[in-house]
Length: 276
Ligand code: DGL
Image (tube, rainbow, N blue to C red):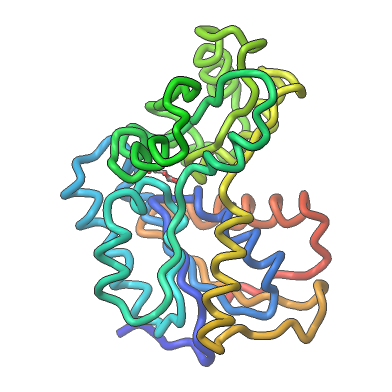
């Protein structure tokens, strides 16, 4: 039996450490909430799997989170969202918030040409994303960039390695960067390598992700449900976080903490994380 937490936490789930970027943005915006994060690094990457596998793994992860009596579920994974979000929404009686590539904000920022969407193979091929392109009537200007192998590299080493740099350089060498207006980070792992991407493509290309939109959505749904924990301690309080990872390798939790704290620092967060 899992130990229950005293207050109802918000459950956050990803195939691995990518969703830690979303967790950081949640803690930054909603520091008085309590969080339980499940990273399924043992089964990452999801983005090359069949829909049936992604669905089964996601449902297992969510079951684990439900044992903590979570009051809302954040699927901090574009890939899992593409495959399983409808089923989760239909079957759970708590707010369920998913993620999709931030194509709309990307299009709005695009002043000069193409919008590159970096995401997993599953996200780019699935109906959810292709319906979004159709709805926004933008098909000809979207370049789909499935980044096979990139999630594994980030799972191994976090946000920087020469291998990641070479990978990104090679991926963009096929395009004339003068024709790219915006890059959309359609996978929560890629947020950790944003600096490398900027370094390779230059600062004239806007880079967007869906994290802020997701946090806004969480806030909105909790408010509507009367379950939002109001910010009493100010931005510099203590945020309680429980980190869980399916991998037996203890380094995954070490990496998760490191990525969480680094991202919070980059946001100039003055609070502290209490690991529970
Ligand atoms: N962070 C996941 C996403 O946003 C990565 C998926 C994977 O494991 O391949 O799509």
